[in-house]
Amino acid sequence: MLSTRLLYIIAVVVAGTVGSLLVMQLWGARSLVWTTPATASLQTKLGWNTLSGRPPVLVGHRGEKAFMPEHSRASYWQAALEGADYIEPDLALTRDGHLVVNHNEWLGENTNVADIPSLSHLRTNKTWLDNGRSISVTNEWFIKDMTLAQIKQLRIRQDSEFAWRPQHFNDMFSVLTFEEYLQLVRNLTIDVGRPFGVIPELKSPKFYNDGRSYPRYFEDRAILTLSHYEWANVSVEVNRSAHADLKLQPLRALPGGVTLGPAAWQSFDLDTAEYLSAHTSNVPVVALVETLPWAFTPGGLDKLAKFAAIVSPWKDFFVAGAENVLRSINVTWDSEEIESLGGFIPPYKFAAEAHSRNLSISPYTFYDSHQPMAYLCQKDASLGAFCPTDKQAEFFYFFSLGVDYMFVENIVEARLLQEKYANRVGD
Image (cartoon, rainbow, N blue to C red):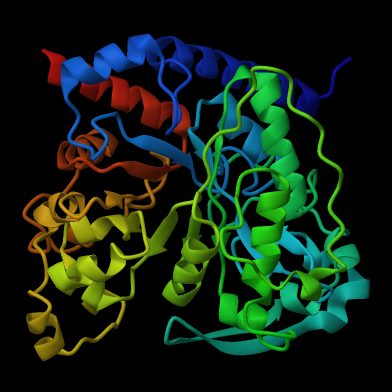
């Protein structure tokens, strides 16, 4: 007799496949770089307010973390089956120089590391600067202190804070390397029959570069790996001699007619973002700007447009506005500097201002319906002329603004809301 866990796995895969087929029937297998005739017709008829005129691109946030442990092999498979356009990994760097996929710089919240006695001596405290802000984390296991062999002992779990997420898959999947992630997406492109975008975020580059042989070790390691897997062209040479130890697997050739999806880089560190843009000219850069007051001014957007293709703020900047959001996270600013850059752009005008500079917009994160939406106005109604009351109101507001990308969880739900909005616009 099949076990309960195995039956659940089968049910999820079947449900994901059905959802994927539904999505593909409604929208066609669409990514940033290709469109089916049916989707093209729909786009022309509806006239989306995005920079491209197409429906917003949906990015599977850490895969499909609404149902699977984030950044696990299963999470990426689920995201693909549900019809994500891009599948997101976060990148970290081990002590022995391996790129691995994990959101935090530490491992205690989403793995079983605390249950492994042989790793207990690695538990420690760290403080570092991240984009000018001091970060302190105590009593944790940090990726930069561990070897790949040690990290491969771990198994991924759902964050215990989110008790409504399925816990059936805890301790089943190991932490992936960046190379394993890229191999997986290439295989998904073949197995599912459509391309998927890759959109790696380099987490805390200065933290990981500290103690390395030169200050761009992390970035160059990522560039060389993405280039090997045929998503990036190295347009300005990197320090290859420092990475002679980087042993990547031989490529498995793609079948005839199979095309890889697009790629994009992400980083909160704009020095890193600009470096990545300069060294891989075919890979656009997403500038993550939550803690940078100047980025929400006309002059700030002019600066970003010199190297970034996409600007990605926390979604509440489009509801509560820059001043309210920045105050809520204790970020201060020089009023004279902001005024000299044209002042803060009103939340409802930010997307249009970005589009006027040929910048796409990618707000984050649109959670599963079980999770609070986390807008300031839900605690104080004065913080936003509009305050979404449910998932549909939230998505319809952002669709109307013309956002180009959306980092989402529960991808099928997001896609169906996209279709519902399209039908509403077409009425």
